[in-house]
Length: 235
Image (cartoon, rainbow, N blue to C red; front, side):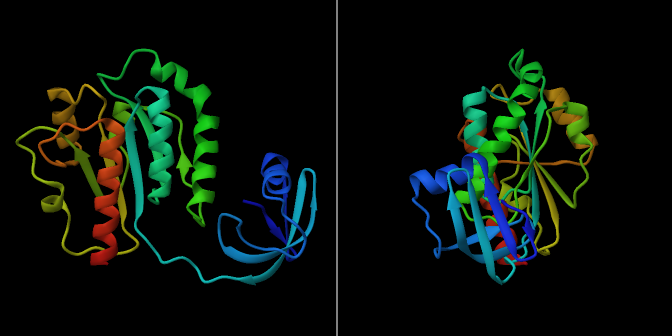
């Protein structure tokens, strides 16, 4: 996502090389570009080996306002966490915060710092593919206690417990496009009773996606899709 200066946006590095070598971009072609704030219609002025320059033709209408959804996801094996980052980005999540739960596999927390740049790259590519105007924030992994402190207008914890109410029953009837929504997602082994108690004490509302036990990344996609659809239809 290039920066727009004086009606010109320049793209360099690997992204520019991809446009030139793979997509065979040429001067005169039109593209939609974003500076992570606004979306523009832009015309290619020059295309070189590792640099593409665009001339802004017009600023396009702003995307429809949507709730700001933060996904707090327990760390899982990194190949599957990468898939989670990609799909959550496509679903419009505003931020992804990894955290270490009690049953998180040992070693993942310590190794996660070295994966942050890769997760951010995956989010960038998924944003481009899904034509997002804004990149999601991919945060450093935090502790369980820190994850619980996240402030939001609505905070939901997905729980596979059979006594938990369905997510549709937990969602509010009246919502606004400016709402902040947080979704807390556990590890493969599920929550401990202590974590459930701590989340409840911190004000998180437990809800379920049904009786089927889902993988963490599957639950992320399902939960985000339900929340996104609910806020779009009710706001």
